[in-house]
Picture 1 (cartoon, helix red, strand yellow):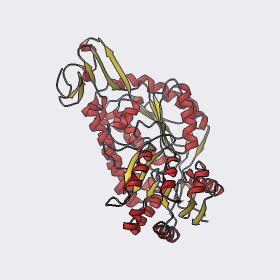
Picture 2 (cartoon, one colour):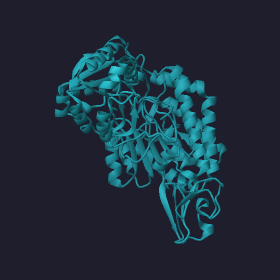
Picture 3 (cartoon, one colour):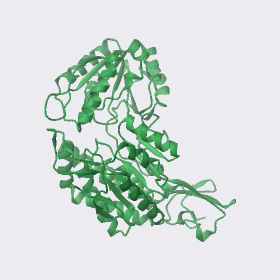
Picture 4 (cartoon, helix red, strand yellow):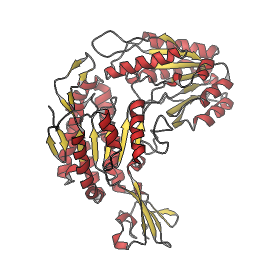
Length: 525
């Protein structure tokens, strides 16, 4: 059985609650490696070690943290082919271009952006009031960040290499990584890389630790434990809300990303102007990666007129003709089945697909549903079920007034898009929808599908509840993603030589931005 990493030591799990193997989604066969399901004794040992080392890591120079993150990126590149081969076997995601040419470079880019933010230090928002002699900055939490990674991004959101990992380390916190059971071998390779780099950078032994799997009750105990600093979870709504409840009850920060249907509003002028092009874009976005993106359009909202019907017929034909792709896990099939049952019970009609493919692997037909605006507005909750996979629902509104009502009935989402006429034909209805949608989504788009999350400092990957646990944060983009794993540290009349370097009179880098007496500036005090 594979060893876990606790306090810098690869060792067997103690009193494991069970074991598991990863499954090859292409044929449903179990892979040979055996992994432990840790009991809480392993988790508690990791918490104690991380809490012991948290003050050491908090005082570690930002340059050392940046060196570690850069070293992880270089180590990933050095073992790229091994990582791609393992992730392909565990998830069936294509080696090219998905894993090798898209996701792996994104992962190393994120790590290097986090390193740059750590070096720059402006992320800490150092604030100095010279008259009152009060100073403040964001700094580490003083405890570990527990990272629960998702099943659909074995690299970019991996608990041992992805954006949460990078952000937590860059902010000066230890990480306890909980691997996803869909790709434990891939995660193990990332941990081997990070552990080797941490030793070379002389970071404390509990900077980074690995638990492969745990029982649900251990997860809830972990996120609410007195020794944990914060947690982050990406996955299903039931699991995310269960963890959030436990963390909230204990007063511990947790950042969850659960379900999102990412509505797309197609206005009449846009369809009259470029209907076929929009149909191609929307279909491609709905089925990209077998629909296993948290930004997949799950709702397509349009008016039931001639252009709307023609668009729908075009998209329906694309859904009918396209082959079924491989899903990353058997649980994804089960989730699709549950979502379809709920939506059809609430009045939606399946017009294309709708069935799992009877093969040894995990495949489901690309599936399109439709429902009237009247029916949707009678039961908006059940008709906003995320079907994580190649499934989307078209809502046909009677008129522009009802399309605004549909926007008002939406829950919180990661993204929301409006396609409108290039020369203003849709402006009146656009303004009404946009005024509502702006507060329903984290990332608001025009004339663009939401799949594809660009890693830029301005990116927002978060949103209102229930898509995420807090509307004020993003899981992508540096330095903003780091603020989830930071506390605001205040210093009142503290002797100058006892202040953190970022708050002393001399700017420690000469370039970092600081708010000094109400002015953002890189100057010394």
